[in-house]
Image (tube, rainbow, N blue to C red; front, top):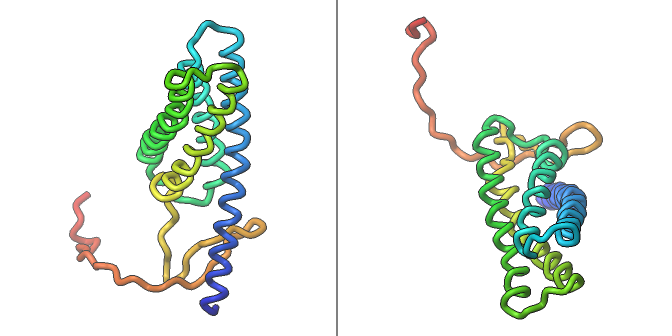
Length: 182
């Protein structure tokens, strides 16, 4: 495949990934804003505390969507590591998201219902950029390339494979099977 074809395939794969991330994120946005508004209007919780609770409900919702739909073809071997990193990066995203709301509410006194929703959504937008980068780079890692072929895109039930540049791998000596004790 030509370099242009490989680039096109990779861009198509990225576009599909962004679209899937966006669908899960949009549903998470609805959960987040819905729970925030529910808490703001039915409890005496302060604006940012209610927003933090809603953010963590949305984080749990999003994990299921990302793991089982957006990144279902990614490495599934280290679930504890994956969940730990997901929660760590989600917490940073929550700090970004709710930091915007906190600044608007307590720094500028903009705490009306419309203002709270506007700054909640603005914070979510900024945090989403961070989350997309961190999830795809660190949490839901791509499977390693085998035999010079890497999975870069999913197409109608089967993964598309394209040649990737071979990277020399350091070989580790392995003892013969007979010498292994049982």
